[in-house]
Length: 229
Ligand SMILES: Nc1ncnc2c1ncn2[C@@H]1O[C@H](COP(=O)(O)OP(=O)(O)OP(=O)(O)O)[C@@H](O)[C@H]1O
Image (cartoon, rainbow, N blue to C red):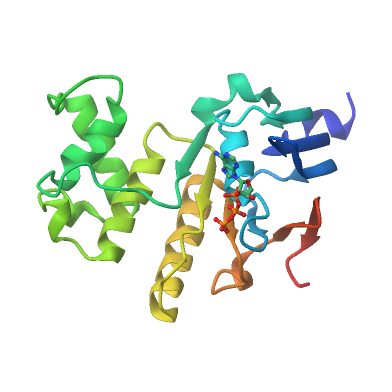
């Protein structure tokens, strides 16, 4: 056995990978590997394909070519390893309270509001605690600020203990103070949970100092750079 046998599998590995949207090639010939535990900014101008790329990693967009692996698994087997915060997350109803909202994500396959057993309550409170949102458990979502809602959405993305967290433009529309708050929450989650984080953005932001890599999507190419570019 050599040292390479003991190396952890990369969180994401693309080999000769291509992503298409209809007849348009968003990128091709991509060879990229993101180490486990890293924080990477997916940087690209509007319309370059960042959301489509994240949706492809979730198995929701299937126009892909080449080898795509998440922790060594094909995309059809890695869904439960991935948490996702979409660019636009709408609340289902203004009166739904924080705890019920998260519980619905956990029991997303059922209709109506969940019955709280102790395992469900424990999991919901675990993710609310992780995002400093336990105090929002009894608050109706319609009465929360943008920052408070985002903490709940982040908690929702952590349900089921994903190892790779995908966030689509989570800093968009935030002032610098809120960007810094989100950056500090993400860096704490990364270290506490050993999470790998891939976060899309159309401009470099408050997170840049915390990022290990920049994954740049431009001119039909997906290329990985060290963060200080
Ligand atoms: N469902 C769809 N059907 C057809 N074309 C689509 C669809 N979704 C996205 N596109 C197109 O695919 C390209 C990439 O879109 P995508 O939303 O992935 O870009 P993006 O980099 O996330 O953009 P933004 O920063 O504006 O959110 C765009 O040209 C877009 O118009």
